[in-house]
Structure formats: C-alpha cells, structure tokens
Image (cartoon, rainbow, N blue to C red; front, side):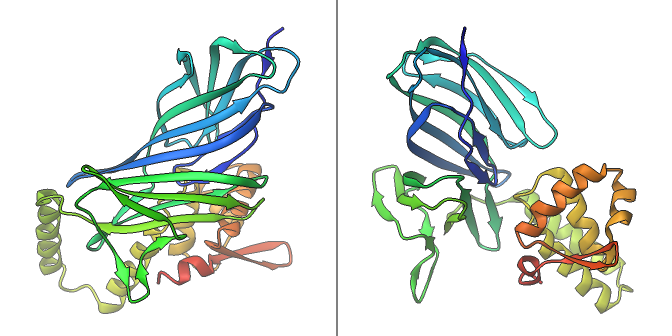
Length: 311
C-alpha cells in the first residue's frame, strides 16, 4: 500500500504556504526573485525541501497546502517533473501529487516547487518585500535568498540599510543578492523585510489615475476636510491588509469603516457562518489587526494596534 505524506506545517504569511509531511524535512531553502514593472508586482519563488524517508516502506504520494492566491507553476524532484492536481479549499489551496519514482526507506530527495506570489508592495518611492514565517517546530537552518536587480538602491536610515534581520549582501553581473541563514524558533514569527527602489520607467496608468483624481477633486470641491481625512485614514489602513485573504479583507474593511460594530452585524452583512467568522476573528486578532471587547455576550469590534500605527 502506498504511504501518503502527512506534512509538517510551515506557515508563511503573505503569499504563504503550508507543507505537510511525515517524512523528515532536513533542509529548507527559498529563493525569491521580485518582478517589478510599471503595471505589476509579483515574486517568483523556488522552494527547495530536502526530505528523507524514515519509514520502513516507500512513500509514493504527497500533498502541499498553499495560500489561495499563490500560483503554482511547477513541482519536481530529483527524477524530473511531477504531475499534480489543485483543489481549492475554504481558506487555502491543496496540491496533491504522486512521485514518478517512490522515495525508498532511508532515501533523501530534494523536492522543488515553483510558485508566484504577491508579497511585494509598491509604496511611495520604493518597494517593500515582506515574508513572515511562523514554524510549528524549531528550524536550525532556514535559508532565504532574495535576488534583486543589480541596479536597485537599498533604502537606508542613519542606522544603515533597511534589511531585517541582518543578512549577507553580494553582487553579481545581474543581481544584488541578499541571503539569510536564520535559526527559527517554534511558534515565533520571523520577519524577512527589505525596502528598495529602482527605475521602472514612466507609469502612464499611474499618471492617468492622478489626472482623473485631480479632476474629481475639482468637481467634488464641496467635500469637507473631515471626510477627506477619514477616507485617507481608511485607505492607509487597508494598505496593510495585502497579506490577507479575501474573506479576512472583507471583515476588516467593515470594521475599519464602522468603529464599535458588533460581531453579529458583520456576520449578517457578509453571510458567513459562525464557525468561519470565529476562525477569521482569531487570525485578525492574533496579527493585531483588530481588537475585541466583550459586553456581556456581545462582541464589540475595533481596529487593532497594528493598524492604529498606520493611521
């Protein structure tokens, strides 16, 4: 009988993935190459897992769980490409696959997954790459490599370049390479962050949008200053929600626009089940995006400390 991989979970927020395996995962390596242009931003990822079969029988099948917005481009192992099937779940995407050649007992093999994610954001005058990893067990060596265009300018302050945590920086003819070799603690979030700028040419759509906005401002000159200020606060706060799935964004959007709203009112507006709403609330509260205050049996919802810093 084929033995199915039950994967050890690694949660990568932001265009994140989860991996399941009863096999021992000996090494982790993620190589990310951002794509930045005047019309789009994305990240091409190569995820390499060195796995070992500690079972007494061959392992032939496996599964991976990714965020819903992650695009899976290819899966392969030491023997070549692997066919896979995608299944959309409620809050994630399951990838099921079968090894061309089963992994024998005691054998080590590299499993490589190519994905495209969107954990890079264009801000005012620069780009921000952000990856947050929360492992369910200690990882002694987690290698993460970020390959940037050689002409990028790393953002800096008086304390130095904005790279978290400290990393090794090297340059080739094509790339500026930032490499981390971190030791990750169990259940403790580790942030990998880089801010950089580069010339991506004239963004005609951006300028068109600016012109349209200026015209709209002239036409809507009667809008009061307080309404404009309130709208800007909401827009700035919502920028911080790029890491969330669509359901989480919908809930947070309502809370931002309706301070002190009751949880049952959010459920009524969105039509979510109590079970789904409970899961969403836990994730948002854990990230500091919302605050929950209880008045008897009623749960009052407000923006959390993480978003308040954006306002």
